[in-house]
Image 1: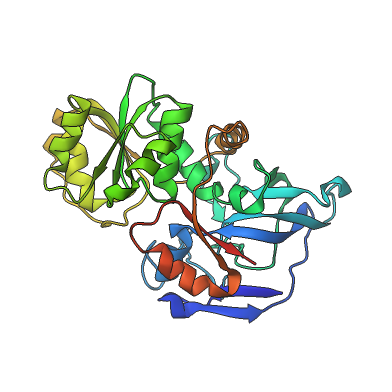
Image 2: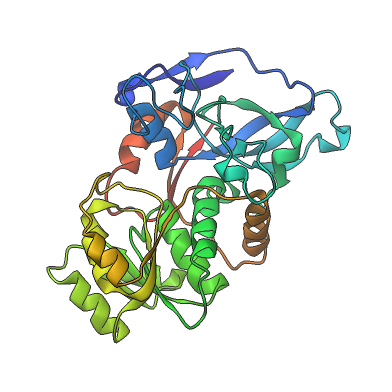
Length: 344
């Protein structure tokens, strides 16, 4: 089969198109013919070595074993089943839950042996992938492309909103609101949990689209007085911040939070390290949450909300599988709205 492999830590030149054997499903597994695979920051940061040192970087302490096929937002058709898997799975259109874990229900994502598809396992930048049958769910939408944009970004966003226990009476600031996680944070916080959302983007030309997703106000991080604008449109401090930017908006986020506010972060594209005055943290009684991925129960709740039309797919552009390098390069461009999807 055709696949794109990461051959080591580095730039996009470490992505190579290769012909490799079609994987064989083992006991409890199925073979999925990949129809679509959305791109996430996770596989880019895995390739760049951003999750650890240059020698060892990945979701697990031992680092990634190369070559590795990346890709974790996967939809496709089950075309073969392994031992102990019912043949009724054959022909099913599925979306893959993106990791394995021995953690108990509700704590799967924080188990020490959590292993991610596309990092610890070969993923969806390929024509076929094997995966445990119990982690294959019915697609929530009718098309492969639209159903592929939720697995990692959607689960991460859903978990973030659940962590802060968003309420209809609250205002939530969403940074990076035009990105994969951010655009879903906007939808989930507003359309599912009923909160008022202030979306932070770079280009205010996206204002109408962000409001279509559920944002009440749309502001630009390029403003010289962003904190003041947030406080002005909200009539005071906000209840929570859902952040995927990191350092670039960290000071602003803490400034606009109310006493007893909540700050939840799941990304640091705008800087991985920051300075914190602990007095801000304790004098304002702020609660910090680190967040990535989520639980299987949350994944199921998210799929239900998608099926009910409460959360809609936002796709910026698609690329053929062979153009994975170009797609990852484009992914890092500012100004896009929604997900980038690879099509084998």
